[in-house]
Length: 122
Image 1: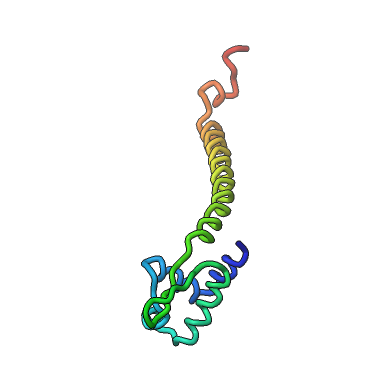
Image 2: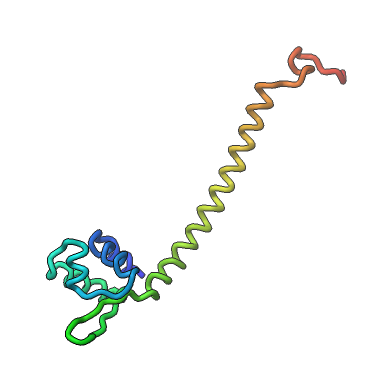
């Protein structure tokens, strides 16, 4: 999974992956769409292939690159663990903030017997 993160950390490779979400593409089509030189795209595709993010298929006289879902699904599962953790922490923080708001309201709007420093039950 580390290879997936490392490959996607480079902005042009991330752009290539986003483009391949729409379907397989040849190097030339990727190059044209992203306005990168073909050798650059080929190098980025080599890194993505080594990370397992793309696979290549020869069709007629061109090679089409297609996104592989497995590494992205693995990354998604890993990230979901942290999402659940942070959602729980945010929920706990919301509870603390609500408690603080109630306490602030209680202090700023005391009951009538508390305003005069007297307690009716004495």
